Image (cartoon, rainbow, N blue to C red; front, side):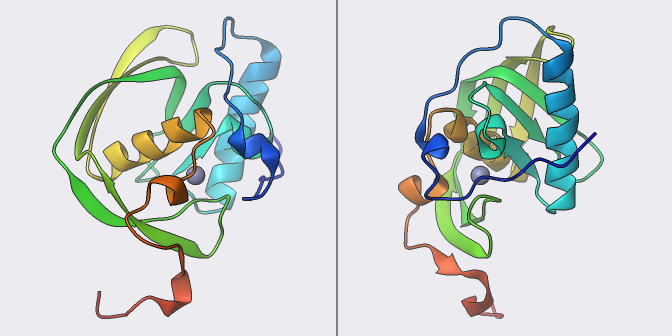
Length: 159
Ligand code: ZN
C-alpha cells in the first residue's frame, strides 16, 4: 500500500467525469487499498478516485472507521429526507460549507469483488455517499452548498 497524492481544488482533474469500471484488475485493487490508506492518513471519511488523479468510478467511505465501503460504479436509486450541515472535503483542506443533502439514500454499486451490492446510508453515511458520488461527475460540494465556503477555524464554537 502507498499513499497517493491528493488533488486539490483548482486541479482540472477534479472537474472531469469518471469512467465506469468494467473489470477488477490487480492495478485497481492496489488503487482501492491506496485510497483507503490515503483517506485514513488524511482523517477523511470518504475519498473518490479523481481525488487521487484517477478518472474511474470508484469511491471508498468509512464514516466511523469501522465499516469500510468500496463503491464501484455507484448509483443512488432512492433518496429521502433532508439534512443540513457543514461538509468538508480532502480536496479543500481546512474549509467547510453548509450543504443540504438527503438524510437517507440507497445506493447500488459493485463491491471490490465486482458483486452487485446495495448500501443503505443514513445521516453522515448518506451525506458521504452523495458527496463522493458528486466527485465522479466533477462536482465539488462548494458547487451545491447553501452558503459560502468558510475557513474551519472561523467556525463559531457555539455551533
Ligand atoms: Zn470531497
